[in-house]
Length: 84
Image 1 (cartoon, helix red, strand yellow):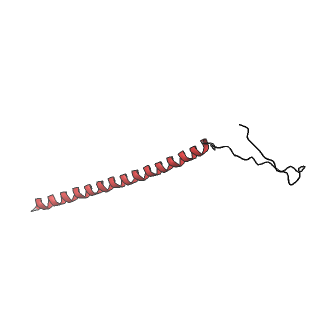
Image 2 (cartoon, rainbow, N blue to C red; image 1 turned 90 degrees about the vertical axis):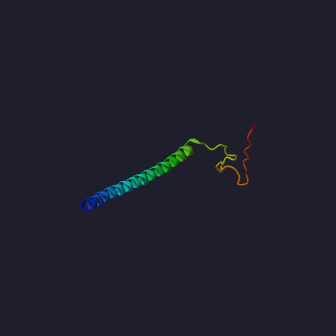
Image 3 (tube, rainbow, N blue to C red; image 1 turned 180 degrees about the vertical axis):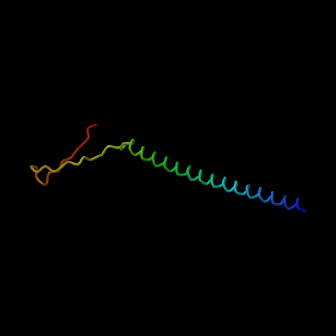
């Protein structure tokens, strides 16, 4: 009978250690998944910032705003035409 109790105690201790190791593994996987998600988000933000800096506006402005010259009459309109 004493051997049966001893076996139960040993099995209980081993099961407790097994549960703790599984919990630790799950926690490690959760932390790793969070870190990977943060790194992916950070990489996406950095890529967007780099794209914003490197990509100039593809089309030049069609109209160029010029300041009004005080010597010209108020009704004067300057028209800008591109020569091709």
